[in-house]
Length: 92
Image 1 (cartoon, helix red, strand yellow):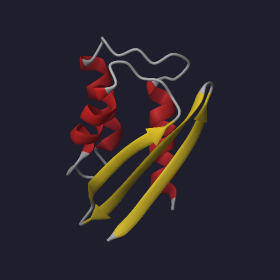
Image 2 (cartoon, rainbow, N blue to C red; image 1 turned 45 degrees about the horizontal axis):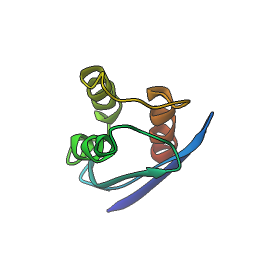
Image 3 (cartoon, one colour; image 1 turned 60 degrees about the vertical axis):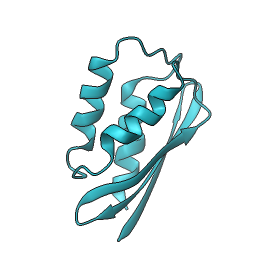
Image 4 (cartoon, helix red, strand yellow; image 1 turned 90 degrees about the vertical axis):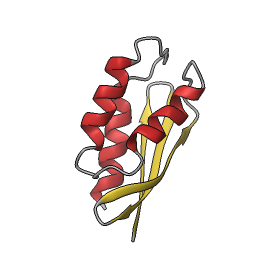
């Protein structure tokens, strides 16, 4: 099992994505940081969406999640910031 951690400093806030990789799949996905997202449970819903999927699918799953959830407000942070944090986590 491999542990991945990636961070990205967005315009207003740090995004940190952390997960374990087992057999090419993401497990124990945690998204933390000092960014603001409303509704707050959206972060947890995004973690659940990524959980158990192949690491090569994670970026498109993020796109899908944010495309479906037009109600999410993230001042000064956007989906690209989350993808950069994800890419940084996968670099190691």
